[in-house]
Length: 280
Image (spheres, rainbow, N blue to C red):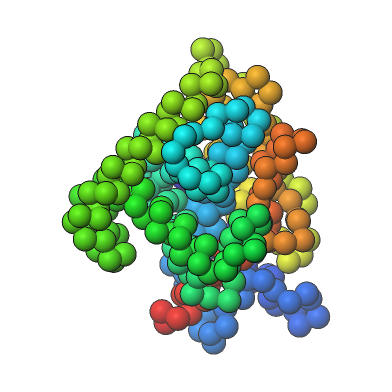
């Protein structure tokens, strides 16, 4: 997954906090020290990785709601959508896909420990911290189930013993099978895949930095290209990034559109910024 040059994004981030008269910046270090290049690279990677995961999650809702591809035996729709994202990221295996999974896990863990929670809107009646912790645990199990040896360090850090890791292997195979079976309802491309539409709406001042990160790293295009390469949709969905008024993401069934909200990416930037501050 490509990342643009650190000096550019550093300038964008700093530009969002230079004037006292401007709106309260949403990406601003609270520590007196300046951000290092490594800090900024970590912020960019985290924002991009979580945006990609969120879009695949909503793509899971799209294939269930619009295409009728509903997996059996995984759980509720939110868990099934997370499992779809895991399948898309871990099959075939790649360093970028692995890292995106780790970014998503970290975001849920950080949200559960912080004042910000990135929970699905339709789960808002539950304790969002509990939801985040549950989602993180399930994704850890997906990772460990996909590669017990490769992710042994994550299993250990998450407190999984050998028996639990074996159970994760069985869970992952069950999820793979469930989604593979369900996705047979959608044809595969036989020729050059049809492109899915993408659009980055203009952001307000508060979302300008993350909008630049998302567009320069072609986040919508990355997900659109992979979906188009996997599925020949009779009615292809489009992907849009926009200002929504709340930190969320959604599948707009009426428009058949996957929507990523700049506020969600800003919330992810907040989470990793606070984590960087804690570590220093």
